[in-house]
Length: 316
Image (cartoon, rainbow, N blue to C red; front, top):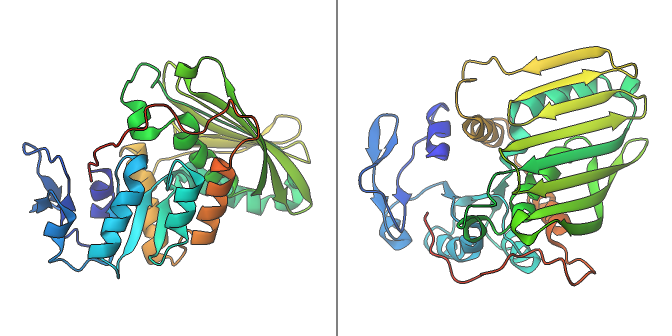
């Protein structure tokens, strides 16, 4: 529904059909006030000829669903929910395959990130290169017994968001370490990365957790000049200060759709950029970020995959 609501605000697009293995019969799929057919199997939707197939299923089902999409819609581009997979071999197989698969790293298109990227480019000469980056992502999933089956763990689910945002400001080059923090039920991880920026390198720390009392997502960038840039991805706000802490500029989303849910605005911006501004997220960049997210850690006690990896049913 998030994708459909985002697409309703864009011109010249039609949603032909939906596929859901467990459809909610009481809530039909509506696009621009008209009901859209919903099928329970991809093969039943084979009469359509879509340009794009959106795969919005649990992470562990992505490979199976994308294989089915390739069989029934070989000429369609695939927009795949992030992350592509929860294991590196599967991510490589998907993103190096014959079909064009674009990963929907929606947070990189959020209004506060777009504003901050423009400001950083405008102030590049006075800011200097980034020297330190911190990104914190928390969700209150520690008591949600379905979270692992849907999302694997906090690192797999939220880490890709952090990397996609940081990569807008400094190219993510290497992951130096990854460790689990606290109790396993917290699903709390800390990753340290090296980033490359014009004029030098920056260290980025990414922390993800399901222990939070409420959801929180933020990115903080410190520059060589002492200037700092702060982004709050939950409140969709950002601001920058100089080396004396004086406010340079701030941002709060007051656009016409600012009352729409945060994720809906993200997807609308992603679709607009991808379909109308000819700026797709390149498959090579998606693969690079997945390599950094999912590469095996030397320490054997830090598995990236969570427990209970039985076969999950897909809700498409």
